[in-house]
Image 1 (cartoon, rainbow, N blue to C red):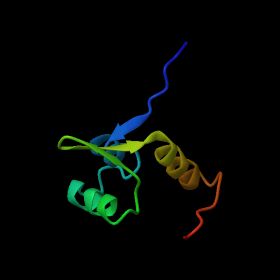
Image 2 (tube, rainbow, N blue to C red):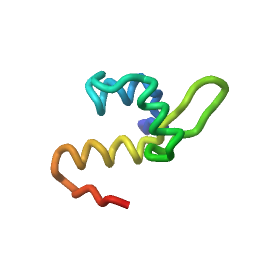
Image 3 (cartoon, rainbow, N blue to C red):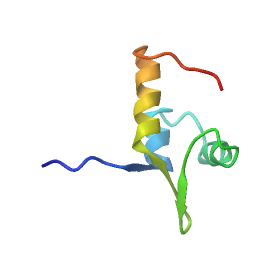
Length: 68
């Protein structure tokens, strides 16, 4: 059985979602503003896979973004 990744590091999200066009500071600011869900363990932030998957589907046009 393949184990699914549950969380992504901020570096992985910057690379996968933002193609490294967003600084780490900006990403962490969005986390603090609660625009991106995340948990903190020690000095590291982890972003849940459900959010990453949703952003990919929005970018692909599979689902529409809903502004809250």
